[in-house]
Image 1 (cartoon, each protein chain N blue to C red):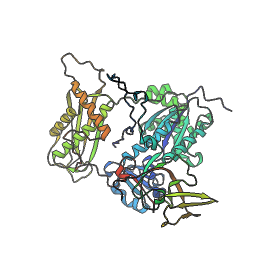
Image 2: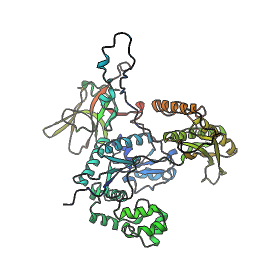
Image 3: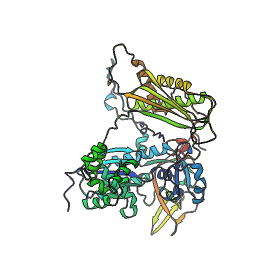
Image 4: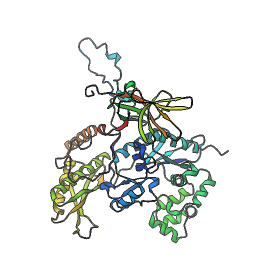
Length: 144
Length: 429
């Protein structure tokens, strides 16, 4: 058996700004004392964390929440889902993306599109929360 | 109340349950209660089974022989998806490493942790590891805790065997529990006791782990090996094996694979050997070694009685200790020319890098050739490019991008976590 292990996760977009040691002949840059770390989407989305996953959404039922078919969602498995969270869940072994409603002993998977009725979770249904959607990403150039 | 765990070392071994099969389930909630098997490279034989597939399929069973059994029991087969397993393994290991102060990744699905001096209830801590890994990755792990690595391995084995009673966590620091487990475990289940050693042990009247723990380590060490002596001492509770935080460099590096189809011409075999040579030299550079000899071998299928059989290998001495993929590839492909005989249908090739040394460990004589400094630079640029843009971006011309002889992996799941075009998709309908 030969195993191909993929190496360490590729480094994220976190570059430290280089402080140049060159002394400018003219007026020294007033910005030099205010250099900050570069912005990193990897860091914002925590995309390199062991508990964060990416998934692609297919379907229109979450349009009202701003998640369209073809969008990417960032899913956090470490969070415990609360009332009102958008979740990725397995309902009777089918994976779905819905808003979680939990009030008065009633659990409902709500769509964010009037065309899709709410799905009440009844006795006998098996619901496993896979993770909580923390961000979504949309390609505005190629989506219609 | 027992004394705080200060004096004696404490080890934990966390081991993923049916790791490959569990990985296949993470992104397939529909397979949560479907038995799964994972096949070796080329979909040859079974290399992993989910817990519920174990009663029906033997480890190592050839896929073509068990197709009917699989269908009859509704078992789903997957080609091995090492990109997926490697990535999920890394997540599991990162999570566990973040919970302990020292650890040693022992294999793709096992990690030893140092819990020495950790206050509180260790079983409770084991449960915490288990719960966190399960929630964050979906992979179930078992945890064994004890005063030595060998006993931790045994504790883990017990946790797996008595899953229902133990909840997947067993702490054998308590001598009473330890003795119970030692008495109720056969000697062949002990870490490092293989089939041959089991036969030797049984001849000496050693049948259980307890028998071995009570044997004289010095005598067994003299009769067999120092490894066995350590095993005996570790079973009796004396720690002899420490955490190895740095993996020692390998003495040999091998890359060998079956072709996806039988090959009859020399050209594709040379391509395959060049590809394996490239992979082996990558591993060589990753451990900062040089090699002086390589062995190349090719063979036909060995099991089909209707086919002519041929297997041959050749040892090639390189001009100087090197890690230069160009030198290694050239030597390897030239070796194929010496080995190849027409008229056979070849099924497998192997490239073995031997006589490995660390730079500076060997004395070159004054007039000997050494690897030119320019080659070192070229190799580091090559590795840097392939690290950033993916393996195989920059490669020797002898290595094709999409080989016709590539492994058969017809039942492979998507690379959910490592390829943007294969991301996990979720329905919002």
